[in-house]
Every structure is written in structure tokens, then in C-alpha cells.
Length: 82
Image 1 (cartoon, rainbow, N blue to C red):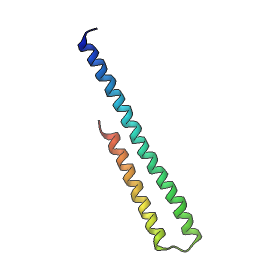
Image 2: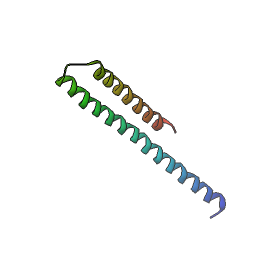
Image 3: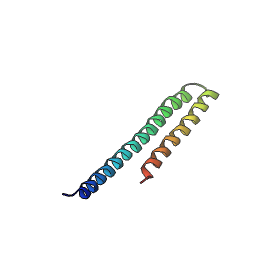
Image 4: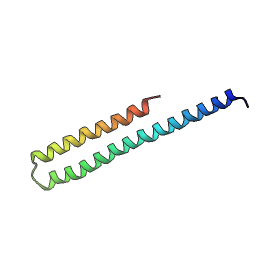
């Protein structure tokens, strides 16, 4: 096997490792988004049902939704990159 062929094989293996790494990182951000959404829905939703709504609770719910959207978008951008 020549040096050029070895370099081509190494290059394709590196591309595959980068692709798997990107997919894993993108899935991680999606999982974080799901976790934040679930936490905010459970804690914020239950506290709104049990207690009378307060400004802090509404702000936390909105912040949680924004943070969820941000994390999902970051995951999307990472997975979209080639």
C-alpha cells in the first residue's frame, strides 16, 4: 500500500469520526432541550395549578421555553453542518 492510499484511508476515517462526533453532540443538545422543557413543564405547570400564578412563575416558564428553543436550535445547527 502506498503512502497516498494510506493518507486517503486516514482522511476518510477522520471524516467518519467527525461525523459521529457531530451527531453525538447534536443529539446531546436535543436531549438537553427535552430535559429543560420537561423540567419547566412539570415544575412550572404544577406550581401554576397548585398556587395562584405569580410573575416569577410566568417569567420562569417563558425563560424555559426560550432556553429550550435555543438548545434545540443549537442541536439543529450542529447536525445540519456537513
